[in-house]
Amino acid sequence: MTFSATLVVQMVSILTNSSAIAALQTLRSLTSHLDDTQQNISSGLRIGEASDNAAYWSIATTMRSDNKSLSAVHDALGLSAAIIDTAYAGLNSVIDILGEFSAKLVASKQDGVDKGKVQKELDQLKQAVTGIANSASFNGQNWLKTDLSDIFDPDVTRTSLVASTTRNGAGDFATQMLDFSLADVSLFNSTGGGLLQRDPRDVNTIGGIRGFSLSPSSDATPYIQESGEDGWMRPAYANPTGAMVEFSFPEGSSLDFNAPGAEIKFDLILDKEASNPWNETGPEGSLQELPGPYFDGFKQLGVTITKADVDAYDPSLGGIVTTNDKFAEILDRKLEPLGASAYGDYDRGIPPDYLRTEHNPILMTIASKEEHGTGSYVEIANLTATNIGTGGLVEKYRYGQRGSGTVLGFESFQLGKVGDTEEGVRVDFKFSINGQPATSHSFDRAYVNTLLNRDDGRVETAGDMVTLLKSLLDADWKLVIEAASPSQIIIKSDPNFDRETGYGSSLAFSNIRVNIEPIPSLNFLSIDVAEHPESVDAYITYMNTATQRIIDGTSSLGALRSRVDRQTDFVQSLMDANTSGIGTLVDADMNHESTRLKALQVQQQLGIQALQIANSQQQSILQLFN
Image (cartoon, rainbow, N blue to C red):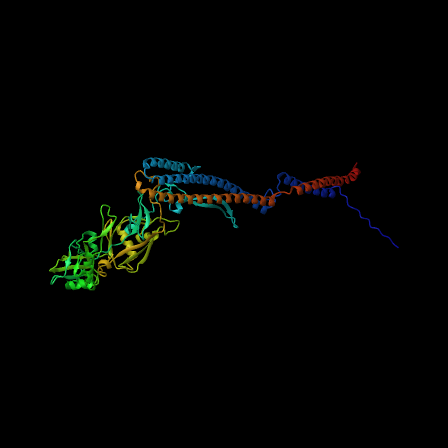
């Protein structure tokens, strides 16, 4: 068996100590790691600079910037909440005062109450309301007393509160806002329109197609004038007038048809035509103009009333008529087949108050039933009475009038804004001539601006109103519409196409509706029960409406306050989430870092010992040179 051995001799250099170099490199690496760990522990961050981790450092830096913005938003929301709370408190106080104000208005209706003293109390309450409105300011912001050029323009009335900030996936930064309309809460505005002021968008008579009346009707809408007078807006219409003549039956006398040859005879002429037969002047005369040729009327000659007619009516009368109503009924039987009627059953008031009535023993009428052509006319001509009186009949005639036209009293008006739509205030109405089926029409701010080439929705002149009415009605009706003066507009059916006169003629606007009505048409500060005691009911109605509007505004503020509170909580939560996310990305794990520090310190000690050992190997070589 043969054994062999290999002797490995490790080179030893007097110029290079490889072991020491390796030990030194290890020690340097340990020292670097130790420095990094100590830095992490001292700063609390594992990524403190971009060189540590560029992506995470960039994200963390951006999020810290966003958190600073969110902190500013949080502060702004606190400021907004304070402004809202100030306005809310002011409106709540005003509601209480208005309740007391209304109670005093009701009390002023009591007989014997000194309205002058009541007004002094009301004036004090007015001052309390204005004082609250003036002082409801926070940091220079007053939402109850405003200076808005147009309180109905949403761009003007919009106030914006900072709500949040956002950053999208592309890194674009944006600020989110909460919008609120000051029109909902402003009590007094410099240009009008506040909750306690007259609404300047009041269209009043809408250029004359409706008019104010103290009397209600089935088609009227409630309206309170700026003076406080309570009434109604009634659509414009024309009252038709038929042909009718009046007679006076001789009270206390009788008609005895028993006398030989006793009779009353006359000619009856009905429904002849004429132009402006009443000779009216101005615009009213224009309404009655009628072009020729003219119908000369229906004529029945020799209409005769005899004892036979009395007996046919009521034999028990014995041929003697003693009352106007009986005589009128006998006449009516004779005239009705000819196209006329007679009536005598009228009442009259009993003095002194005329509230009670009794039969009028004198008055009788004969009227045309307008059955012959389009005219309206009645005439008793060539009247004779033989062996008897006339029973009050006299030769007489009367024309009816054309009722298919009227004169509108024009006043300029403006269609204001409503919300952020271009259409704004809208007016709807119906229109009819001579009882024909009504047509529906409407116009709004945008329509007027386009038609009249304006940008403010105003119908300024009678000429503008004529243009507007023609654009709406000409497609359905044959009309003449023209300005008679700056304050008068004639509207009538065209007599070249419509010759109808009397009760068969008519013109009517109807169902007029404005989309913003009812609206306040008087000012809270103008209420005066001492000067206008007749308007107390109107004032009470107004106060109910105004108080409800302020309650609605207060509700809007309450909803906004809740939204601000929710947004404040959300922003705080978002800031907390951002802070947590940043910590996850860049914060150092102190448990991990401290354990690692101890391990690196041990390794450093071992590295130092390894370096010492490596250096000690060279000492034996150096001894050879001693």
